[in-house]
Length: 393
Image (cartoon, rainbow, N blue to C red; front, side, top):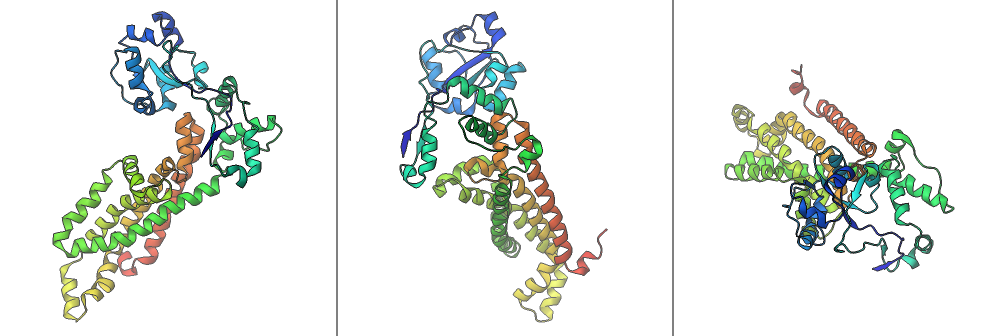
């Protein structure tokens, strides 16, 4: 790896308070905070967890505050403006500092180091992509702190996409082209097909794997009483694990980020409805039918294939449909580990508190869930034997 191309701005940490409140309380520096222990803190999870964040700052300044609950950085400004918190952590190039007329407190003991923006790159990049490397080198020292604040404001406050802001900046440098504008432009932007393909891959690859594992597990739970509770308990337990916590466990297990841990998480979340519905569908078949089939000389495998699974088909398919629809929504978390999908837009919207970006990710995810639900309804009519479907309302 190599480090180079200093872009020209320092994006260091800072604490900010409402300008009016700061003036009324006489708060201008971080040291002044120690005189006001009643102030409410709204700090981001990252700032709380970093060694050079809250804990170090608290010790350096002797601040009398308990560690608060974490608050998403993109929402902290609105919480401060609404009077829900009094002090938030900020980055020195945040666009909303000026919008909300906040006072950035002086770091009078020089606790925070400089966080100069540089590019981290693979050492073979200049040889593999010389034109790209030349373009990156052309950015050396070209973006001042003030310019970065303005660019951030275009995205956060002006509603423009990252791509549009970057393209406008490059156009000023003598490059660039047309950009998408408006909600429909963002919804069907250049990344739409890629995100759709990634989302569908995550949903259906994990679903197929869950079907291949869930059907035998459900059958085993119905056939073998000793395995019933362990199977149902373990698959149910997985559902209680928060999705991000499960990903945090799977990433070191797989040794990588991206599609592998995301597929594994979706696979595990899909198991419960498939396993439970398979077990329930088989368990509800009248024993008399099984006994009649045995009396006719059918083997256990033939009974399962020709009688039990067809009779349980509607229940099993309902479990698969439930798993598929849940997967569509849960797959949005894949973006947090670099696996793509519509969650990329949702994560971007959360980071910027940008409702347009949130909707551009949430709307296609919701539409896809409805399409999947409808597709399984049609599949139900096609796969389920006509005799079982005759009594539908």
